[in-house]
Image 1: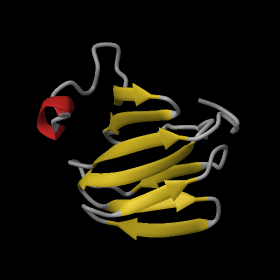
Image 2: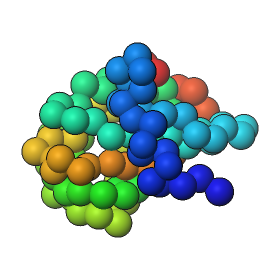
Image 3: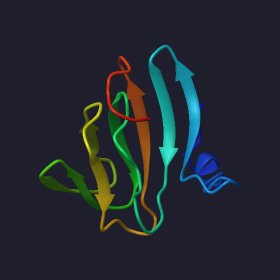
Image 4: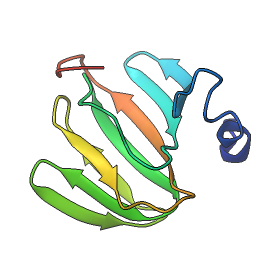
Amino acid sequence: MISFSDSLKRLPTPDGRKFISLFERGTLKIELYAPRGTDPQQPHRQDEVYVVAEGSGEFVIEERREKFNRGDVLFAPAGVPHRFENFSDDFAVWVLFYGPDGGEKS
């Protein structure tokens, strides 16, 4: 079992990362991501599913801006620029990377 509260206590990491890798099998990788202030991420090499664990804000993907809340599920295809904006201080998402490595950056 992966505990949200235990995982969140490990962020940010000692080296300042805003995410922590928690599970990996085949092409599936699960992380917890909790940016504070700004979301500096770049496009990733795999498709991503975000499950909002806490908080609310806006998900910006290409030219779209979508409001999100706790419990919502968001999708970002590999290589497509996206970010979180105007999010609450408690914002945290489960990130599920999966599929072939085919995007721009990791």
